[in-house]
Image (cartoon, rainbow, N blue to C red; front, top):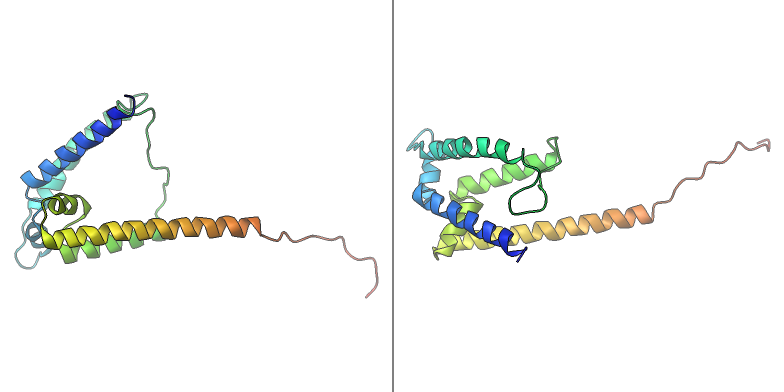
Length: 165
């Protein structure tokens, strides 16, 4: 029973998020592409959706982290990294390029793929494949690092030789 509450909370959150995306028409790639087309058919709807999400999220976040623990978990799982790294910048650029080309990002893509829309289902499959590839590369990277650390030769420091050269 203890594990059901987080799963139910995640399911409910996902359904609410998906319904919000559908209601705001953010599952329509044309709406997103028009937001990005500032010199042509610009549509500011996405900015209002983002602004509304930030207006709801920000006060709830600050209220939530004041609690000793979350409602449906034993502890908070907050990011610990506080600096911008090249990998973050690269991932952001890759995300932006994909978003600009396809007109969808991961959340709306999964909602639309669930409805069976063919091009977005293909995008979602490629996205999930990319996530799997990332996880595989990360696991390999960690294994290589651990192996290198285990086989690292520690240089021996000797006292100066007393033998004349």
